[in-house]
Amino acid sequence: MIIKFQIIKSVVINAVKTTTFLKGKVDEGGDANALKLSYVETAGESETHEAKLTHLFDTALEKVKIIFVDYLAPTSQTVGDNVIYYKDNNDTIVEFTLDVSRRYNGTMANTLARLVANYVECYMTYWWWVETTNLKQAEPYVGELSMAEMQIRRCFVLSPPSVPTIPYTTQLSAKVDGTSLGGELNMEVGEEISLTYTLSDGAIDDIEARSKDTEIVSVLRGVEKHSFVLKAMNSGVTGIKLFSRHNDTLEVDTEIIVIGEQS
Amino acid sequence: MTKIVNISTSELKAKVLEQLGFLGKRLKDTKGMSQYPAVLPSIIEDGVFRQFVDTAVGHICSDYSEYLVKSYAIDTSNTISLQFNRDDWTVGMTKMFEYSLVGALVSYVVYEILSIYIPDYAKKYLDDMIMQQNDMKRHFFSTLPPANEDVSLSNCTGSVTLSTITPIKPSV
Image (tube, rainbow over the protein chains, first blue to last red):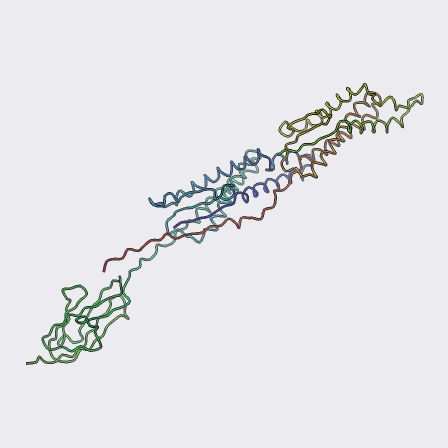
């Protein structure tokens, strides 16, 4: 199963900038002279800040990639699909392509995208506070990062294995000498008839044939595949039934009239 | 991207002279003589004026690190050119900063001149300069929220493609 998702760089970086902006404003609110502190701790538009944020963003992506390693199920054909790359040259959209076992729950794909964006944001914010010496501010993000990683891992919940399907037949028809068996078959005492049956194309099944009165007609498996041999033992009227051992509604019922052997 | 603030020294000088003239016209010494000529620098004192301006720029801009003030120059037309390293500075903020900077420079130069002749009045301009320096800091170090974007976390999406596996059928 291929999981594809994308995160948008500007969304993540804006979230980090907003977080630092709010902290800066709170500091300003608490101390009117903290303008300069607020300015230097707020992630802004300067080249240095942008370069730092991009560096943190790229590093976080690699960290996430390592989380995914546990769930990748590449084959020799798909090993190259397990990649993370920028979708366009503007570095704005990062697209992940993961080849995982088909048992992973694919309904979490959107959630996975947003949780990964959240993980990257937490990672960036954590390091921003560490590197601006706001260790107290950074502290909560340690737990948040662990939580975010756990939540990403929970997206890869396994579904039960799919039940194997066996292509049992849905059709059963019997023929005698190449002619479809009607509702009635005439035999003479001592006569042996080969009965063949056919199933749906490509299907398998286990077909049984039983005589309703073995004194009149006996049924044996034929030498050929998909065939039975009917042997008329005594004169009389009876019937045979062909039925599937896997499908109760699938059967062929035929009346057999055995007449005495002609002299 | 940087923002450049240009200040003409001739305009600066005119503003200084206005302040000194305003004060000198109303001041008289103990003998009742006007202080007007005393406080106004003469043309030959232009060099001193320039020294005061240079000192003022150095002093007032010392609050901003080398990282924040990229360059300081006075060109042949005697225009002071200060280059500030602020990418997200809006036009309004730049203008406010520029007004406060000019005010602080004027106050400093007036303070320097008056402190030689009439130190009692000089103090007022020192207070003005400190106030204008604080204003400059407010304008310079004010931060803006990140620009609004039309994309959000909900635009981060995912999809799943089931691998095509051909079931193995037994031959019939």
